[in-house]
Image (cartoon, rainbow, N blue to C red; front, top):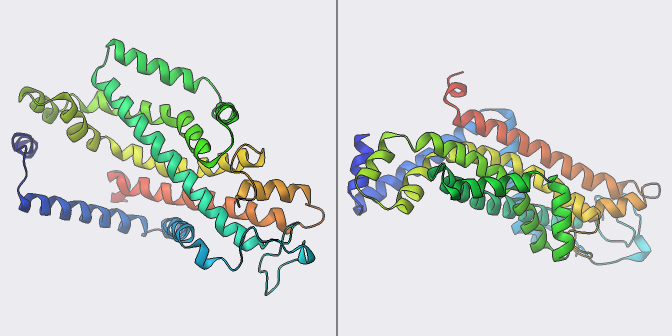
Length: 306
């Protein structure tokens, strides 16, 4: 508590204190990474996620072909040295489309989860900090209304109204999932707002916004981080499903959902068209699940002692 009181009283940090804080944050990150890679599942999950990010950034360099370039003469070609995963019904290279589809999946998962987590955490913390007020009841009402609808159905309705596009898809998925983070944040806030360092901050007359953003939010983020990792895989599934229905990313943009839809039409002619995007989605789901489980164990003191 003494440390918290000292940090509260000193509104301005010296350069030395800032350097120490940065080193502490870096050491904490390294500790978490070491905890994740202690297990084979964590190594696979973290490695695959880093590979997805790398592939998304350098897709134009890694991709052997233009993902929308058509070669009608070589359509429905099977795997070969020239086309490692074969070609689709328009002669487009499937491997190149998988690579560019990874970029869409990464943008949707990180974008929608980040947006929903920020929105949900801020609303949940503000509601929990003002427990019992009209504002608290109003936020809870919003959470209950959104949660009362099945998430995928509500996302379908939002995209149908806004129009199918990558941005609208991210917004729709974020809007339908933020109450999940809001409820977690509110429950954590109800517990931590009774802590000594929060009471000390209030006694010193600090503004509520400063108390919320500097003293409460940083101390409730552990369960949120775990849920973010688990939710990213779900967002990829939703993106694939909406694109499969024609309400996500629009052709000729490469998307795993669009590839599944096209592969379903020609499953008897060229099973490779549906196998590779389905395989990519399945491996991604497994990777995120293993990463989330390792991340949870790393942040849980009881698990670290085992």
